[in-house]
Image 1 (cartoon, rainbow, N blue to C red):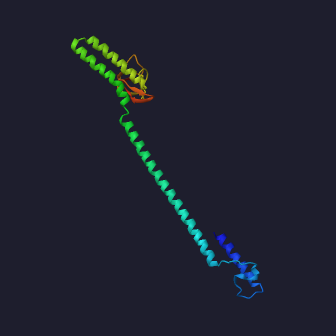
Image 2 (image 1 turned 135 degrees about the horizontal axis):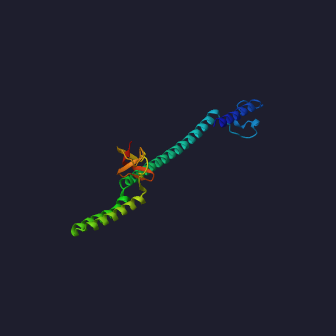
Image 3 (image 1 turned 30 degrees about the vertical axis):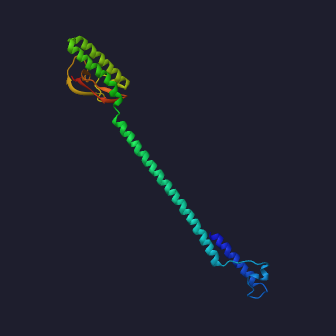
Length: 204
């Protein structure tokens, strides 16, 4: 914009110099013979006014574009907030019902156990009850295995990562710090210890 103003001012200056060097009267006006033809020369004030109008027009366009970008940003921000809320709700639902799958698998074994107890109570067939319970335990182990759950091994030395030594005893059949008895089984789920085995350890 400043360059355009400078160019206009330079044109006015050149016209003035040309008029001063001509032989016509001083008040010849715009039809001076030195100009060759009728030509309107803008004043400095007129040029500045046009430049100001152009600047105001461009400023208005810039403000309009800025407002448009602002509204677009606000819409995107609102969309992102809604997306975040939906994801938080989905995560909360997953946490709330995360155990649904495994519980559904255990329900079948629970039903079988109830039926076995009911049948044994009526017939007094405790041998049949024992077999039924053993079958249910086998089914439960299959479910645990399908979920990546395995028993902690308890042969050999006591490992603090997998075993919790709750008592000590002397045993001629075991070496020092070896596991003598398992008081409660431990379990690992996909490589992570979810319950260490409670054991008794040999100390000589």
